[in-house]
Length: 308
Ligand code: SF4
Image 1 (cartoon, rainbow, N blue to C red):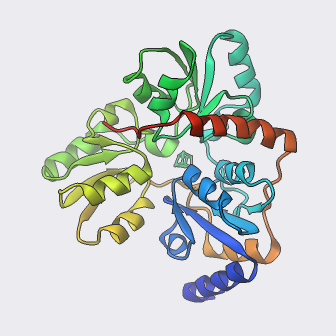
Image 2 (spheres, rainbow, N blue to C red):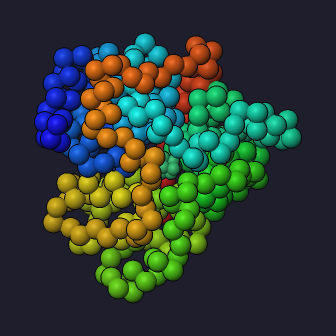
């Protein structure tokens, strides 16, 4: 089937089955093009939970579809490609969180939403890349165990005066981009601000004019007066940036900014997912119940967005 034909058939099925097609900002352009909603992972799950859709098709990676299920336990949540996982989320397991808790009994566990459901279920509060600083500040403990991203954790640490035990996890896509690449680009495009995601290494973050989430990058490049930007996150975001501000130029900060897991999902997978109702996310009710609490606490505790 031609890709336009595939897109049309998917849209027909979405309508027919009262489904909602979600695409993370890092998905392939041809998927973002036909999605009902695009955005950050958590924002998508929240929006989906407020709709009447019976089926959520989450084009992203597994932990995102799990979050959608946690917030919408009554809906069917489908992950079109069962192999789309997140290496960073898999860098910490529930037994490892239990061990941390035993080692630091007076510390609060703050987990980035990029974690699996079992890990969320053992956390005190979750955070996103937008609200991580505010959450760590607000959590009523002097000591914080921050999981799983050491880069986001290090970034947060520069803003808060608390003891932080930071887990040694990282996003391979963001972590393997180095300052030399950014410096070269900055010399070449001296007029272009460098805007990057806090999952980047601290020595890359130190070179940034703005550090923010994917939605923050979209907002910043739209509102800022510059005409061109060096973009420090996964390449899928270029689709949104060019769509939102076609008159501006966006230079990807590295050829390495491609997440193989985010690119696993193809139009063919979405079609099959809708036709065969696969792969359905199944989580034990007890995990859903426990994992929901730190997400709800995050909503209560988050206030102003993170920026620098
Ligand atoms: S970009 Fe990084 S954090 Fe996001 S899904 Fe890929 S590996 Fe995980």
